[in-house]
Amino acid sequence: MSEPRVSVLLPVYNGARYLRPALESIRAQTLEDFECVIVDDGSTDNSRAIAEGFAATDKRFRVLSRANTGIVGALNDGLSLCKTKYIARMDADDIALPERLVKQADFLDTHPDCVGVGAWVLFTDPCDRPLLHFQPDTTWSAIQEKLRTGNVGGLIHPAMMLRRDAVQAVGGYLPEAEWVEDFDLFLRLSERGELAILPEILLRYRQHPQSVNRTRNASERRQRKQRSLEADAQRRDVTPVTLPELSPSCDTDRQWAYWAAQDGYFRSAFHWSLKHLGKHLGDREAWRCFNYTLKRALGLIPAAPERS
Image 1 (cartoon, rainbow, N blue to C red):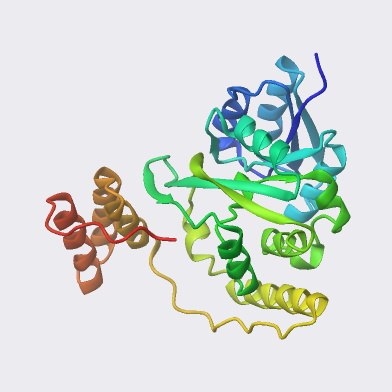
Image 2 (cartoon, rainbow, N blue to C red):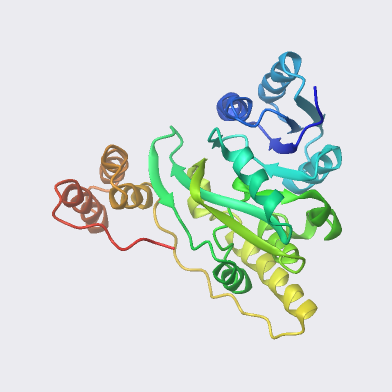
């Protein structure tokens, strides 16, 4: 077998429910010369057995099983095992579309000044029902502007392919930035070159209740992101941006219903709007969400302008 062209870095912690289809999506890539480094971060479910099953039948898959340390430690340990110049990030619950790896590798081959490339993604719910096409502005100026103001800029971490030498040159993932490790890395990488987004959907990005609200560590995440912005501003000798105060989070069911109704996924929209309504029958916002879904499905409300 020839040397791999791309390393896929996939950490997993108790992700057995979704891990198999995620790995199948990597095995089904049109780019066949890859290696997939699976880092089992001390899982207590069946994740390790699933990963080792793939490794036993396909030499392109390798498994590192270790004690649980959290995502940053898992990513850095996996990164140290990757052999190729391109690192494709992947999460254990997402689905890569078949041409993801080849299209991103081809892009980096022809754009030497670019240190990483992402893609548009399709947000899906826990059962892989479609919710939202996420199609942010792909220009470097727009990406950079969003990063400098605390927005990840459409750079979806598990949809990224990064140059390994650039990631290593900026120190990899920083423990002090855990929970915002992707944003912090992108800020540091942006000082070495451009970051790009391919204008096509190459990943099904599975959402979970905690991935929308993120209420548990919201305050700490904001503080860590602020520190990353201040460190970036200090390196560039500019005044740092101050992040706004946290705003109240939207109920997950209602958020997903609005997303799906807006993008025309009415089966998903009715599922989540009815679920939300069933929990909040006396709530005006729940009825408003259901009415919006119904009117969008009947064509009584046009789609809003494309989001960025």
